[in-house]
Length: 313
Image (cartoon, rainbow, N blue to C red; front, top):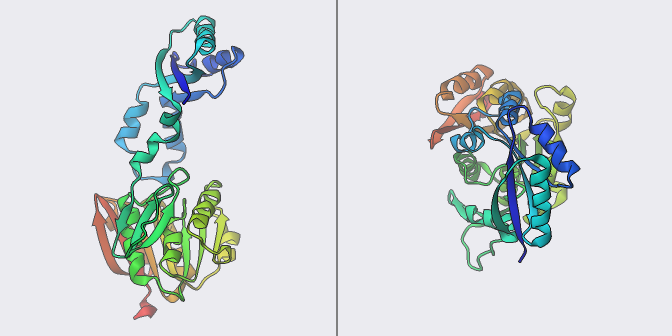
């Protein structure tokens, strides 16, 4: 097992790029940049994609402006680190890590999760139980945007149990890792289209579909902005029996009219990602669109709505 020295060089405010350039000149590669200013800028530029940021994540970046480099824990690596220290005039904070710390330790945070009455969400590296009463939904959390652990994902998957059936066509909007759409297929649905604005989403979702043995003919991925792209909306079509959107309130509200247009007359719209305090605002937007609220669930400060169309009576 290889061992490495992690060296964290702190940068003065506004000098982070200069420090990165200097370390690169000295032969450092694989730089890891941790900077509160960049973190805040990223949040501000992408604020439409979330209603809140986890306090633990905010605390992790608070006051940070540093660059991490890694060198081998041997004489050559220590000589290289000494050159970095001399060349920058900075004394880094150091710690020794193993390969396993990078490759495997994160796996301990992902365990099998029983959801509802039918599903078992199982990380890729966990063996499938020989005797099981539940349908297995395998997932690679290393690729995932959603892992099944979050309350919004659990609530959506529970709702899917009620509506999934062999003849159902599904549309998963903001699909991320594909967990909801793939879950629908594992539960027996006939077809799923997934769509996300993130260009990395198709790779993650298609990899997770392969883990579950999904026939590529019944799972298609699209990339784009549903709200802005009429051509994409036309390509996705209509007549879906189940439309899913586990996003955030600021996207669900303008999305509601389009979600209705995607649905079959007796379809359902299952939506979550709605933080406590915004549920009434989202409910009003849904009903103003013409939806009827068939179910409203909440867990851990998050809300989910199952919506139907008046024609479904």
